[in-house]
Image (cartoon, rainbow over all chains, first blue to last red; front, side):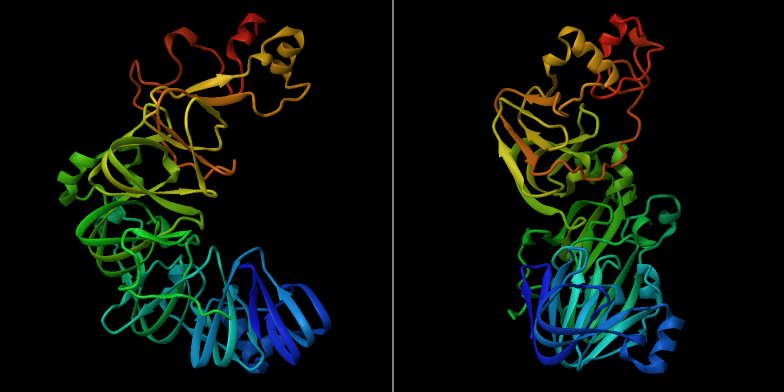
Length: 210
Length: 258
């Protein structure tokens, strides 16, 4: 059971079950816990090879036991996500912990990834359970519906879930090359039905300066 | 576990904070000025153009008077709701009613075109004049103070209506031989609080609750004209003098013949 202890510490109550968490993110625990590094994020040999090839690397540990375990990473804000059979797309660097029952994998994101400076691949989390994602400042959750598509700055995007199509929007014009860019040259446009998580801060992206 | 609040274009606030760190602006075929790269997401049809865009000439004439910052500002134009945020700093909106406010250039995020943006005479600050709303970021919540007050330079966000912002140096620095040696060599230690900004008269001073500065916007070089503070390198009176450091009592050096 995931719960937040303050906004920057994740507390997980366990009764013999297990969670997968980012390696080294445990800050405290009570009760009996066993920590085991999961080679290849528990995705098997194929997952390992994919991650190595795609650069979407993630070192994960499995925590199992009875009691409460506390996780935190560089004082980032933590956001809880409940999954009911749907798929969460998140950058591996923003993923803190998932229920052990959730499957993780990698997927191709296309140009969006490149514009974020995070590579062309992203991590997916799928199944029934809870996941914890990290953001710089508390994330804002925005719903996307058929009537209202959403455009997001690649630097502020952290995750999305649901049935969404993403396309890459570019506002690059000849002005950009004259040094009069708008600073918002690239956006990711989400259409369909689902939720998008954005953080109130921007990573440095190639698009950020244009 | 409490479910997170999920926003859609109908539940997002209009021209108000979504949370402490995110601000939502509603555009109805209207325009807002915002600093480059502070938009994090938007619904609807919004276009972003650098202030050099030809169609914006009329707008610029009335509400943008800062050539030094022209490269840092864009105009959002269209209909929809737009979210603004800056490096997870606190953001707040303020209303000006036929008023004026001077703010550190890095702290101003966005403003309504009914306000006019001007460069302050104080280097590194911008002045907003008119009626309308603007959004500013601060590192930690903003505190409002009444003059007369002396404030730490790093904690100052801005001020409204104060007629005479000026520097203040503690006099103890100057007195006695020890004071002289200390100021020349830095030996003997300093409290770090010998230099303040002083405000007197009627008005309001805005402070942030930390001394960690927000990344300064490059303010560029001020026009090199006689009478413009900071313009060019040194006036005729101090030609050849080494540039003074902020905490230094310049004329002491001269007195010691340095």
